[in-house]
Image (cartoon, rainbow, N blue to C red; front, side):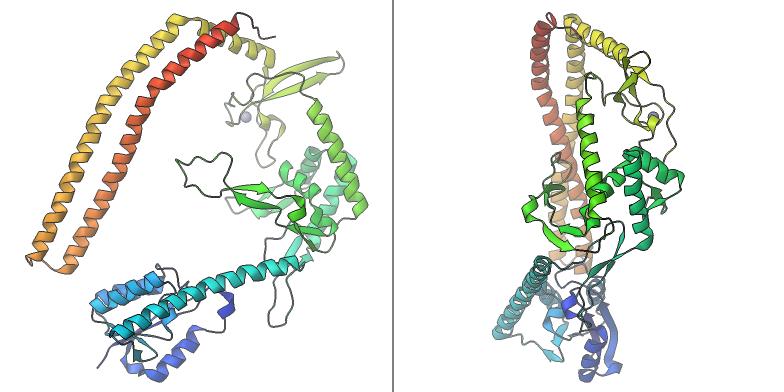
Length: 491
Ligand SMILES: [Zn+2]
């Protein structure tokens, strides 16, 4: 009696919704006796290119335990749609003495059979690429025809999905409750002419956003959200796709993250794809709001009469936000005051209580910082002493790091020796293949962690070497500033 395992997979792709696990099983049971089947493995849905599918993973694990003699599939692409993966699986099952059958027929183990297998795998891979292309081109086509595609709708709308059976396209439906709120926001802005005051009114009326914060509760509006709502052209019926594209972020630290497109850059307006949607705001109101926004932005830009020295360098003791510079006008005395304060003092976020941390006179703080820094630069002895101290510390760090680095190298060498000895033992039939695989796995893990540590230590050592250059640069800069200081003052 043959023990049979069945493997079924339903693609993640929408185009193939017609095939279900049920259909595949029905066909397979026409070929196999139900009594012979030991287990059915499923991936629903699972991508043919993904080697970590849960069902496939289980199948491979049970194959190692030799729980069955035959794997039955409905089509060759069910196991893998990727040439490399399909070859790996084929070899793996063959080694365990398990036959792979497609609808009850085993692939021949002749040269021709192998060749056919490879070709089938290649065709499966090509098919996958074609599906992907078809998906992308279909999306682009629908977009350039002015039709809506799947997306997270802006505040004020619900997204109604495309229904292929009825032949209807996706569209935005106005969410009456949210639309009323948007109308209020526009009305209040015309009345108050301030995004901050509008946001404050939303909070006092207890109105919250649609999104959820970490605790699963909706937030109160942020000023930035209200600002975005006021500028959103979707509300006058023009919804755009392709406003921005992924790009490498401006502040991308490649040491921490892989070089990927983590940023967004704005596309020229000519490339945006327009989609007509139902309106919420009439065009006259919208244009009036835009005019006010522009006017206020201009006024804001003019305001910087005083250059704050320490903006973003002072941190609030209570809420740890960075202090910003603020220009406060005393109209009675016709005088300007400049001060630093915590942004939450005047409600940067309506979701947290106001911060009662103290403000600081800008002139006083700037003066103190200026005096301290300028004296520090002039004080040659102090800088030299500090440099000598860091040099000493660095030397000791270098020695200890060097030692750890060398120890790691020795450990790696020993591990490699042990590993090769393991192979010798195995060839002397000291233990089974399974044991060898497990042991090798353990060694590989250990080796990987040592490799990682070696890389980190090496980088640290290089960093210490670089400190030399940094110190030289520091001395040079100090000299330049000393020269400049003779002429400069804070005011
Ligand atoms: Zn604060």
